[in-house]
Length: 110
Image (cartoon, rainbow, N blue to C red; front, side, top):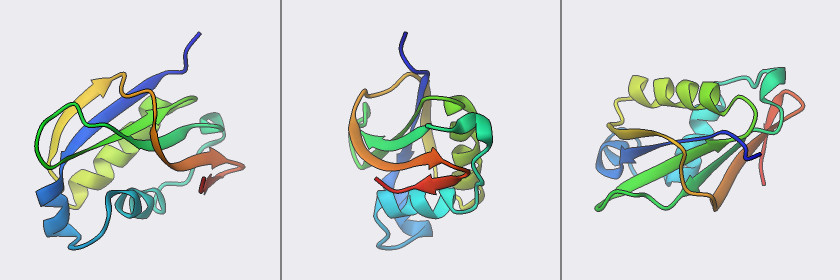
């Protein structure tokens, strides 16, 4: 059985407009800082994968326990900051650059 996986693609230009010069990984970490992991999310991995869209886009993936809920929280955080979300998917790239994992009620760095 595979872990539930969800992903979304955002526009890098709108992210740069909202957070000039901040890399995608650090941007996601800043969003996660405002999201306290729930016990049922233990082991959920957040990572940056290969974007399925052309151009300056970023794909953020959540995989594991509570991946759908974690994705929703990150999406809401991006929307509050005015970052354009281009697509939302059930599924996503199977690998990429790890950003954080929910462990012991905290976001743990790789």
